[in-house]
Each structure stands twice: as structure tokens, then as C-alpha cells.
Image (cartoon, rainbow over all chains, first blue to last red; front, side, top):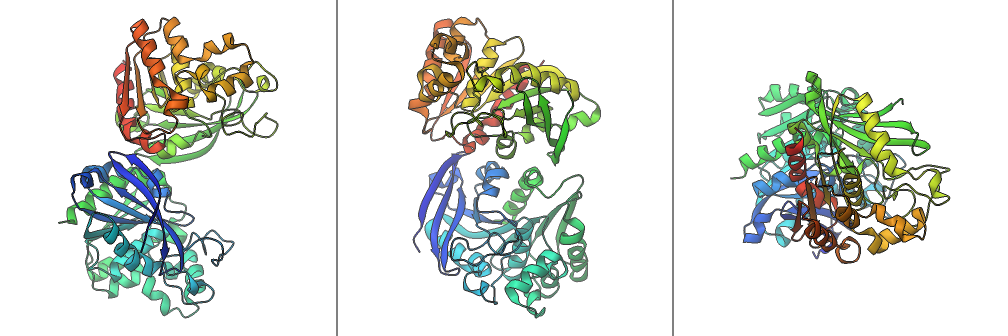
Length: 278
Length: 278
């Protein structure tokens, strides 16, 4: 498990770094970004927020556009942003922006040719935290958040592994992928036609059967172009009512699906997660 | 002077918008970005900070990466970011990243073929403010700032037009282009071999002869790769001493030339400019 540091930039007194490494889950080289807050310079170990990005993104979008480092520096929190899929030559791909490279959907693919590399679920749940906790001055306190496809990833991973995280949040998440075009396309490709297998990766289904109750914050823009067809937050609201889940969901008037929306509310999310790092 | 709105995104309660228009200074279509803070929704007119970007940038880099909208929303300040050169098919260009499209250097070119379109000085000094003040709810209070090549643009334009601006600031500016490779290449191409004409666009020269004394803040990262060969802030410091110019210059230890540096200190710059908007 060796890491290759490929960039290092000082920001808000801490350091934004990128690393590559050979992933055993994904059978290829992967890149991730990490923000290390200034507190580590005084020998302090810090908790980690994992951020999962949306379709077409890499490890860079969130670190460049969300403005999260300012608040992470104040709170003393590391942020880890993995890439959104295995990537590179020799890795299966698709012409669509919403399937294949840049669109791993945080599942373990079971269908050829995707099952050779597309194991983003295992990567985010097991390999990446182990790598981070081995190589960086962090505690085992973890929170998880993400945007759109990454919001789906954060919610499903947290619901399935609720002991691993103290809280979960999402921006504009795909909350019910088994019932929307993005999810149906991706799950058919990665998991096959048996829809029973899809339910393991659907936040609305998981919320009702997992028994997990970790704190959850969701922000959704009212003017998001994908709201009605793809995101369907009302499905998660209904599920939360059914099982009395502690979901805080906020419809933000006028905001869309972009990083301009994420930048506007990321401070609330970091402060939300900080409350549960004890 | 008609404007074509091509994007609109809500951020921090205000709006980030992009427009295209036919520029009479540049004889081509130009694009700019504007941030309109929430105060304008209450019928308030707001002052404007002009931001000039560096080599290779467009109107987008600053608006996506600096995190300035958060503070502009608080202070009630618009931000306008033009592109860094004329651009498009039929516009003269060069293979280098540091000359031609994306590298207009905020001068009026006198040499063919550049003199047909490359009049970024006139565009930023005259056409753009007139356009902004005609079409948006802004006051005539203006400040100007920029990064690297755009820092050079901000300093020279402010020193030559000190009645137009209440304050000026820069990140990592090229302060003495007549004495560095970037400036010498650009000025030879745009202005010709007569170095007398170059002095009109050199902040270190202008500071000593313009008589201007508007408030000036400069931030420079100590680990900037371009510090020694291209940026040479000590030339500006010497000039300021010679004429007793009110320059506040800060060497920021560990920071580099990137937007991670700008994001870390943009709040100070906006608050600096807000002090002089009376």
C-alpha cells in the first residue's frame, strides 16, 4: 500500500494534496485528493470527511470549487475525495457521460466487462479508509457526503455501514436509483437485469430495511434540472416517515445542480458533521 | 450595446451570470461573468470589483475557484470578470500559452496582426465599465484586482486611471514586465521593439511617474514557481519607497501561484476594497 504524491498546494494554512496508488479493489491505478488542515502541524490527529463526487467528476472538482477547505481548516477536519470510477486505458468504458469511466455509481459490478475493475463500493468502504488511516495523521472518526451520483454513494454506503460513520449528508442525491433513468441504466449495466440485486444500492430501500439511524442532512435545489426525473427526493422523505428516520432535508429555493449550489451550503454540511465527531 | 445572457446560477443568495456581446474595442464577440449579490433584489445599487485573470484563464476560473461570492454577498459588492483576450476563429493566435489568445496582457496592441483585435486595455478601462453601468444595478464605485498577468493588468490600469477606481489589489502580479521573460515576449509581440512604448504598461515604472496614490494591496506566495524569474515583487517595493506610495505588500509563506492561494486570501482583498467604497 504505497502512495505516490503528485501535487501539494497550501490552502487556508493546510495542504491540498493528490496521490496515486495501485488499488487492489479496482485492479488499476487510482488517484485521490486529501485536504490536511493546519491542526496536523501541531501533531494533532483529525477526523475525516469522505466526499463522493457526481457524474463526470474526478478527485479535483470538489477541491477546486466547493470552498470547503476554509471551514475544514477552522474545524480541524481532513477531507478525502476519491475519483468517481476506475479510469485509464484498458479499463472498460462507455460513450455516455452517465456510465463507465467517471460514472462508477459506488457499486461492485457483477457483469462483464465491468466486474473486472468497477468495484467502487469496496474501494470507498474498505480500501480507501484503510489507506488514509495508515498513511495520514487521522483518527478513526469518519463522516461521508457527496453530490448527485456521489450523494447516492454517500447515503447507500452510510446506511449499509452505519457503524463506520458518525453522520452522512448529501447535495442533490439520486435517492431512488432503481426508479430513475440514471440508476436503471447504470444498474442494468453493472449489476444485470435481476432487479432484486439493485435494491442493495438504493438509499430509499435501504433506509427502510437497514435499521440504521445515523444523522442525515440533505440539501436539494428547487431549480435543479434533474429534480423531477432523476433525483426524486420525495421518495426518501416518504421512507424516512415510514421508519421514523432522523432525516433533515432542505429544499433550497432558486438553486440548481451545480457547484455554485454546493459552495453556498458546504459550510452547513461541515458544521453538521463536526457536531458528531466526538 | 446589447447583451446575451448565456448562464445564470444562484450562489450565496445572489446570481453568477455569463454574458456575450459584440465588443467595439476588440472587434469580436466577448464573454464576461458577473456576480450580482443578493442586495440588488431589494432595489439597491452596488459597487463593482473588476477581476482580471491570469495567463490561460477565461471569465470562469475566478468565479469557479476563488470562493469570492460568499464575501461579495455579505458586503453587497458585484464582481465582473472579463476574458483574458479576444478569442475565437479568425483572431490571431500563437502556440505559446503566454502569448495570443488567453494572454492579452491588458494592452492595446500596435503591431500587426495583433492590433486588429488585441485592445484589452481599452476594453477593460472604457467599454466594459460602460456596459456594466448601463445594464446592471451598480453604482460608479469601482475597484480592480487580478492575478499574475491580471495582477499586472489591475496595477497598470489603476495607476493610469486612478480617478476611475477607489482601490487596487493583486495576487502574484507581474510588477515589472519590461524586465521579465513573460512581459518581454508579450510586449515585443504586441507593442514592437521600441522599449519606450513598453513603459506605459509597467507597474513599477508607472508607480514612479503617475503621481497616483490609490490604496494598493498585494499578496505574493513565497513558494510561487514564478517568483524569481517573472514576478519580482521587490521592484515594486523599491518603486513604492522612492515615491512614498501607500503599498501594502504581504509575502505569504508556503503559498504558490495557484487558485488555492487566491482562495485563501480573497476575503482580505474584498474587505480591503469595501473599506474604500464610500
